[in-house]
Amino acid sequence: MNISNENAIFVIFGGTGDLTKRKLIPALYNLEIEKKLSEKFIIVAIGRRDYTTEFYRKQMKEAIIEFSGDTFNEKDWNKFVIKISYLRFDFSHTCEGYTILDKYLSKIDKENGINGNRIYYLAVPPSSFEPIINNLHCRKMLLNKDNWQRVMVEKPFGSNLKSARELNENISKSIKEKNLFRIDHYLGKEMIQNIMAIRFGNSIFEPLWNHQYIENIQIISSETIGVKSRGSYYEATGVLKDMLQNHILQMLSLIAMEPPISLLPEEIRDEKVKAIKSLRIDHGEKVEDTIVLGQYGESPSHIGYRDEDNVNSKSKVPTFIAMKAYIDNFRWSGVPFYIKVGKGLPEKETKIIIQFKKLPGINHYEEFNNTKPNMLVIRIQPNEGIYFQINAKTPGNEFKVNSVEMDYCQKSAISSNSTAAYERLIIEAIRNNSSLFTRWDELEYSWKYIESIEQAIKSYNYQYPNYVFGTEGPTMADKLLESNHKWYKS
Ligand SMILES: NC(=O)c1ccc[n+]([C@@H]2O[C@H](COP(=O)([O-])OP(=O)(O)OC[C@H]3O[C@@H](n4cnc5c(N)ncnc54)[C@H](OP(=O)(O)O)[C@@H]3O)[C@@H](O)[C@H]2O)c1
Image (tube, rainbow, N blue to C red):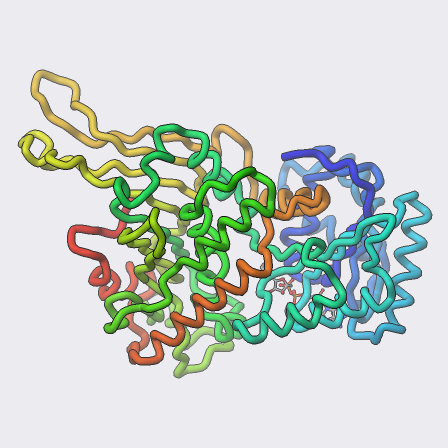
C-alpha cells in the first residue's frame, strides 16, 4: 500500500458509532503506526453524545486494545491519540447550524497548518447522507478551490433504483462525482485487487478467459452466522441488497470485464460498467430454473430467521440466493455465472471459481476418465489465496492421473488484518484514486439488475423457511445448474 503525504483533516460523522469503533479508528491507528499518513493528518470525530475529547480518546483506546490485543503499544497510542479530537454536534442542523462545525474545523486546520484539505467520512444512517452533504455545500465546506474536500459514504447508497437516483440527483448540486467516494469495502480487499493482476499479468490465463475455454464461473459467499443483532437492518435489505447488489456484482464485474486500456480509475470503471450492463435481465420462463431463494429455519442449535430479534414472524425476506446469470457479450456468450450467497451455511468463505472446459477428446484415453477439470480458485476471505487445479501423473509404476493443486496462500506471504480493506480505502481516497470506489453508473446498473431479479421472483411463491440453519441451503439450488455442473466444494 502506498504512503500518503497529503495533509488533511479526517472528519468522521458517526464518530461514536459501531463502524468507527470497530473499523475506522483501528484502520487509522494502523496507518499511523505504519507511518502511512502525513504528520499533519488530524482526526475529528463527531457525535451527539456528551463526551469530552479526553473521554472519547479513552473509549477509542479500549477499542484499539480489544482489536490489537497483546500487540497494543502504549508509545504508538500516545503518538496517535493527540491527533484525535471529539466534537459534540448534531448534524441534523440547518445550513446555519453548520457554522459551529466550520469554525471548529477551521481552528483545528489553522493550529495544525493543514490548508483546508478534508475528508468527510459519513459513517451514519443513509438517510443522513443528503442533508449532511447539502449542508456542507451550503456552508461552503466543499468548495474544492485552492485545496480539496472529499466525501466518503458507506453503503447502502439508496434502497432501490428510484431512491438511489433521487439521492444521487439531490446531492449532485452539492458535490461533483469525482469528489464522492462510495464505499464497497470488498473493493479494498487484497484478493479483489489481485483479480486484475491474475487476469492481466499471466499469459496462461487471459487468452483462455472466454467462452471457448471456460465452462462456468462460480461466485460463492457463505456465512455460518445468522443475522445476530442486525434483524431490522436485514428485514429492509435481505440477501439481494445486503450482498448481491454490491459485493457480488463488484466481484463479477472484475472477473468479466474486458481489459481496460490503462489502469487509470475511469478506464477500469468504464469496463466494469459495461460488464454489469451486459448482464441478462430476462431470467427465463421458469424462474426457479434460474433463481432459488431461501430462508433459514431453526436447527437444534440455532433459532430460525423468523425468530431472530426484530424480525417479522412471517417474514418473506430471503437469507439465501442461488442463481444463474449470463453476460450477453462476445466473450461470455453461453457461459453460466453461478452465484450462491447466504447465511446459516456450513462454511464461512468467499471465493471465485473459474472452471475450465475439459480438453476435447480427452475421454478417448481411458486413463483420463476420472480426471477433474482445471480450476482456478480465488479465495477472497477468510483465507486469502489462489489455487490452480491441474492433472498430473501419480508417482509410481502405473500411469494414473490425479488432480493436484498449485496453491498460493497469500496470508502467509503478506500480512493482512481485519481492517486492511478500510486502511486501503482511506489511503486511496486521500490519494484521490477512485478506482476502488463505486461510480454512479456502476451503481445505477447494479440496481437495475437487482430490480430485474425482484421482478422475476414476484411470480414465484418461495415457501419459507426452506433450509435448516447450518446446512447447504435449499436443495433446489442444485437443480439450477446445467447438466454435469456441480457447486464447487473445497
Ligand atoms: N457497523 C458496520 O459494521 C457497518 C458495515 C457496513 C456499513 N455500515 C454502514 O455505516 C453506517 C454507520 O453504521 P454504524 O453501525 O456505525 O451505525 P451506529 O452504530 O448506529 O452509529 C450511528 C452514528 O451516527 C451518529 N448520529 C446519528 N444521528 C446523528 C445526528 N443527528 N447528529 C450527530 N450524530 C448522529 C451517532 O451518534 P450518537 O450515537 O452520538 O448519537 C453514531 O455515531 C451505516 O450507514 C451502515 O449501514 C456499517
